[in-house]
Each structure stands twice: as structure tokens, then as C-alpha cells.
Length: 94
Image 1 (cartoon, rainbow, N blue to C red):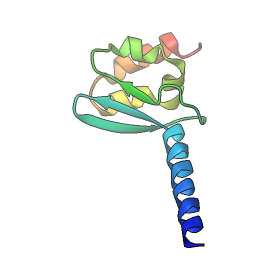
Image 2 (image 1 turned 120 degrees about the vertical axis):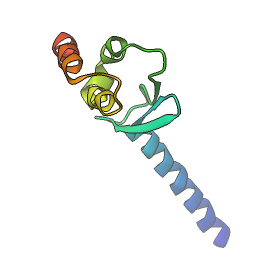
Image 3 (image 1 turned 180 degrees about the vertical axis):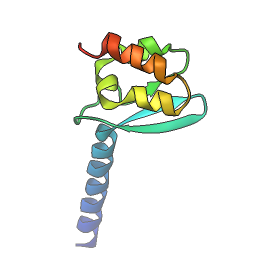
Image 4 (image 1 turned 30 degrees about the vertical axis):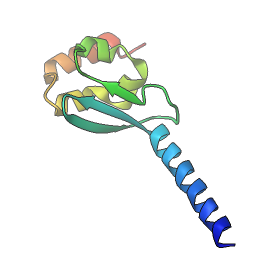
């Protein structure tokens, strides 16, 4: 009986981990690492690097833009408020 409970606990942990991974974008830039909540459960863009990517290229990704990557880049100092507004205006209505 103890083995069965242990198995169920392991399954529950695996399911919880899967749910967590599907719920967040894991954004990394250099040595920093940020979590960005996803709008829906999906594996699209789960792990995303900002290294060697221009803000324009990042903002072209609809899912990341809708989930708030622009504000995250602003908080990280990768883009100015003026540039962010410009990018949101350019890519916002897709």
C-alpha cells in the first residue's frame, strides 16, 4: 500500500511540474532568468532567450507580446518607454 501511495505522489508531482511549465514563459537574458505568465496553457515559447535578439524581433512574436514581454524588457532595461510604445503601436494590432 505504501508503494502505491508513493507512486501516486510521484505522478502528482510530475503533473504539477508539467502544469507549471505550461503556465509560464521562462525568459533568460545573459545570466538573468525571469518568469512571464502565459495567457493560456501551451508549450509554445516556453523557453525563450533574449540574447542576440533585437526588441523588434521579440515584439513580432504575438504570444510573447500579448503576455507582456514588452513590460519585462522595459523592467530589465533592454528598451526605453518611448521605444516600447513605438513597438506596441507597430505590432499591437496583429
